[in-house]
Amino acid sequence: MCAVALCPGLVPFAAVADQSAGELASPVAVLISVPMQLNYDTDIAPADDGDRYCLNVPPVVSIALNQKSNVIPRAIIPRVTQDDIVPGSGRLSGLGDTVQFPK
Image 1 (cartoon, one colour):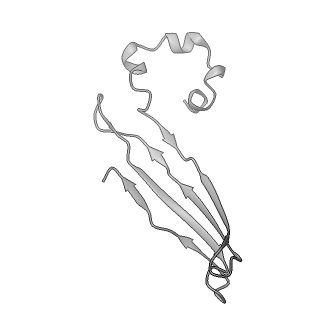
Image 2 (cartoon, one colour; image 1 turned 90 degrees about the vertical axis):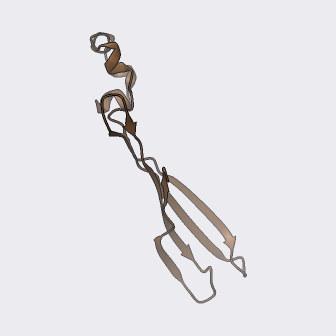
Image 3 (cartoon, rainbow, N blue to C red; image 1 turned 180 degrees about the horizontal axis):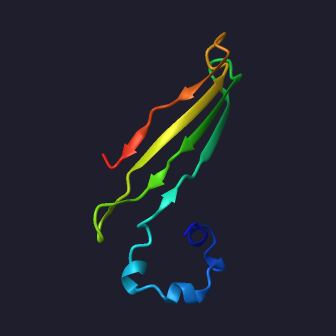
């Protein structure tokens, strides 16, 4: 199933044609996705010499409630590393505020 999600052009048409219409109606039934987004800020802080990296990881996992319904909870988990934001603080890193959907 991973090959279908990552490279749909590699799956022979006959393999897809054998599935019933009900199986194809819910393409997110077994969806697991872990995209990542990296943001970089420079020249921040009072002296304009600070840098900050923020790596956002919003994993998406589909949970089947029954044959017709899925719940797809999403959380955005930021990993932040910053350097010289406050004078004399040096390099700091850790997790930022996590946002959870649905609320």
